[in-house]
Amino acid sequence: MQPSAVLLTVVTYMCADFLSNFLQHPLLKMDYGVFNRLLGRQVGRNWWGTRAEHIVGVAICLAFVDHLSQGVFEHYLGEPLEFETNPAAFVAHTWAFIYSGVALFTLFTSVLNPNVADGHRWQEFKQEAYASYVGANTAWFEPFAHALVYKVAGQHAGDSWVAGALLPATLAYTTVKGVGWNDWGRAGLSDHEMVINKPVA
Image (cartoon, rainbow, N blue to C red):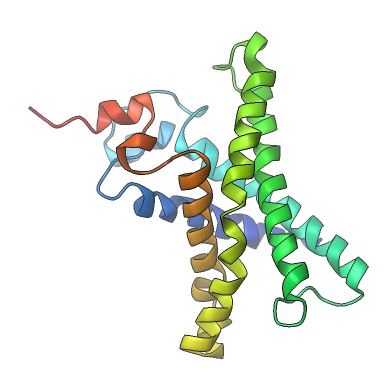
């Protein structure tokens, strides 16, 4: 794994997670923990259980597993993993790294989050891992989104970071979180997000 490539993937996934919140929760305020201060919003928890924790933690786990999975598939195939030449393998890789990466994040947060009671950490992980599985099953379209950009907008757009990487990742984040955790509109707001989205009297 090339560190620079992994870092770019982390940044891409962080941006995709942030942008997906606008698709899932249009016109609503999100809880970015300590960063709420920069947005003029009330801070509830500084880190754990906030969107900021999710954005950073999921991106790191996903990027690591993404590149690890690519290496495994390329070793097995004996050639670079490309959707155009090995569509079935690429779709399998997409599902595998998304589920595994998000599940890895849920493991870390279930163990380390001080807001989860010690006696409930295993149950928390099982619930979150199942939600990861449900959500990951919606992300099969991600490589097709990239291919569609190529077909509709041409190679230049398809090879760009925005259309070729960020757009498909943002759409995948949207469906994985939305379907896996029912994270849509007000139904997906945390307790603190309900507070900061209360109408001003």
